[in-house]
Length: 270
Length: 93
Image 1: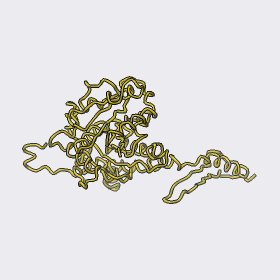
Image 2: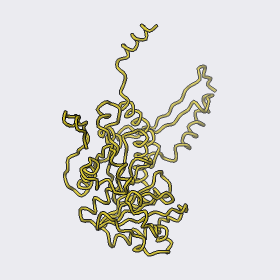
Image 3: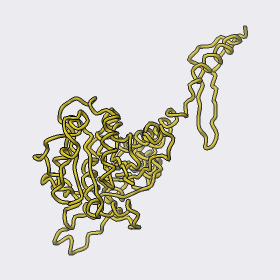
Image 4: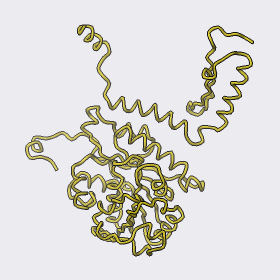
């Protein structure tokens, strides 16, 4: 049975698209047929992060309006065999993203794919709502910072009250906390909320922690999802997240400050 | 002056780490925001407040601002809190 997973946060700039790209790639790397959908109509960016921006011909609005068949709008990922991207439209007509139309697309995708990853736009407007409405599970991307935690709490409230599962009285959307841009050194210094603090406040199970890292910018520069960057801590952290999501018991990493050994201090890390 | 300042600083103890402040602020604001959302706020609350006000106004001259009706969650229980600040020289009608 296909699963629909929304990557959401409320606040912008916390790492939703970075996470969507790496999480979807990770699922595909493990042999799952996966599609990742950009819901940020008017401000599409998943294509850039995935490195397929020059291959976009049709988008989700074209499919909803019947201008193109779904199969023609799907772009095959260049890094993984089992992965496809459905881009958002750059036209500004957000209302074209009708719930009924999105539902039709998701139903059709369910016939072919194991996982449907929905990259939500920031905010709590129509685009974010359409991205979360059909979700079975949600990755709530949160930075260790007050405004991000507050917005995540708001999004959790909306998921619990307004998602299709909530409206239809089904089992609730399964929520996962993903803490990104984490800096264990600053946490140890008392300058940053810890994973435990965030978990205590939001009260949802922790799926993983992605450390703050320079390699995320390098990944987006080159249009390669961060999970493909060899030997980077971010790639390892995302692989752990996917493994945990699929039920492997992988211990948490990158949550304690690394003590710099003499060797590392002399020759530099990563 | 600076001696007193130093003494005060000493008495206040070490400054709180900002992460601790962040957590406390979040816990307070989110408790408030969660209470005001979803099924937690019954829609009869404004009407209830209005009627209580009328009853109290029958007996006491009172500023409408001085009456507060609040619904709070204490664990398993919902607590309906009625707060009336009486004027200093209350005049019974």
